[in-house]
Length: 418
Image (cartoon, rainbow, N blue to C red; front, side):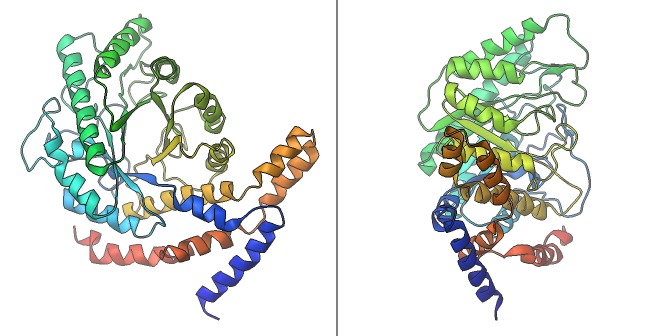
């Protein structure tokens, strides 16, 4: 019996088993097919970008490892992204930071960047069936320091306001070009190594900066604001904390970004979803894995990720939640890191979509808590992997561990020669 026949036979048996608990596996697969992940370009090159500023990574973030084969040019980043995407079922998006512009070797400062610097990205994405998302970049610049949009120095603050305004303009043009809103994420590292004497002052400045940035209304992009717990060297105070952005987002009707690594390890990100959906228009996710705070490890199929996926499905919020990945690991093959993280995220949503939500909610409504818990436990051992294998087979991507050989081949032929 061929491997394909084994997969199909296992799938048929799984479909019957799930039907017994009221789940249509084909419907679950159809819904997963429509979920587009926003792949993060910075995994390919360790957040280096193409500005030619010559500086090192700053702003409270850090990439560890020096695995050979890092992408060094736009062409290499694009090739690596396409290789990773070819091993992931479905059609997905690409999330760009501003420092990844096509600057043609010229020095373009961040308050000078324009849509023209991303035209080749828009064309490339369209040719390859991808949509683009975007991020302003406040780190790794001579004017970054400890404070950017929250800086009391007018020259510094105005520089970053202009940069962010231009990033929104670029996002608008991306959205127009691809006929689909470009999601633009605003994250800044602003903070202090020690406790400041006036916390309120910097948050007032940040609020004013944001109000000025968002004054221009656009129709083809969506604004997201992302909180941080703290940064390396900025451990005692973060201006743009979760509480700050939650309040701002709810008050100004902005999308709040939940980076799964930007919270205390004991916090449930899943629990935040239903709360935000009541008061903000949509949610942006940056899926990461915090081994110790924001360590940005490669995403794996963990209980936390499963809880997050289940909560989104239970809230029927797939149309209001955007799912992006955000980690940078230079200790292993970078394309492998892409594929592991994206497939793990898809596996979590596969399991969530195979949950008999109506039955569980009925048990809950009737006070049948033993039955609810019992079914939740039995679901853990149902044959979801057989459905996942069929999903990969139908999308013509490697099933199971077969993608390992594909990545090893690409490494031997491409990345090892860099």
